[in-house]
Length: 242
Image (cartoon, rainbow, N blue to C red; front, side, top):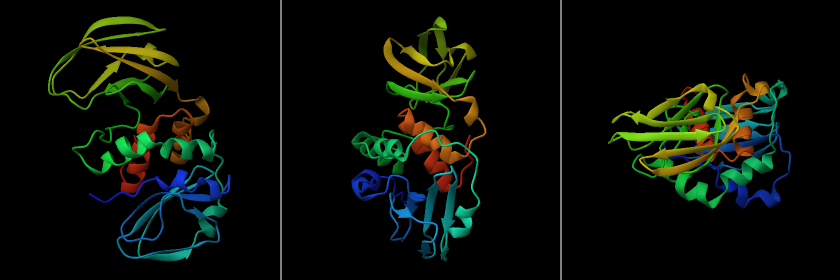
């Protein structure tokens, strides 16, 4: 597994970073001097040795993975602007991914499969391993857990209603709820009487066909940091975003 150099530098250097730079490095691996948080102008000359890789986010929502060996300008790539909307500011992205909890419990652990956090099978799976905000698609809500070694009994409650005594079988990491529960607001999930409170934010219609970078900024806006990290790692590792 690649060593992932994630976005820890975003907050550390934010005071010296222009508020609206053209491009920012969001992930880096291998032997490269480029670090997450580095700002790149379209005219920047990027130099990467062999086996190095960087992932760059543009403000128009594009995320570009560049593998070494590489040397060249990013001007051609940046000239073709996208119409995909970017709903959140760079500041929201920097704050979320520079958060100490994200760095210690999410960013660091994602390098180790035995850590406290594992990249989910889908960026849209709503983890119930802890309480907090989750970003979901309309009419689609799938809960996810890390430990599926035992079966569980689940109850859920939200503005859509209440369902009790749902069986979550052993060895099954996901549980799909009725589509009515995929709605903005509070979702209380009780797993064998262990309560988790999720705050759901549904994907706006305008972002249904958005580029990954636009989704990333939307995740940041609503503090869905686990899903933001999952999206970045999938893009950086060349894994399909689903």
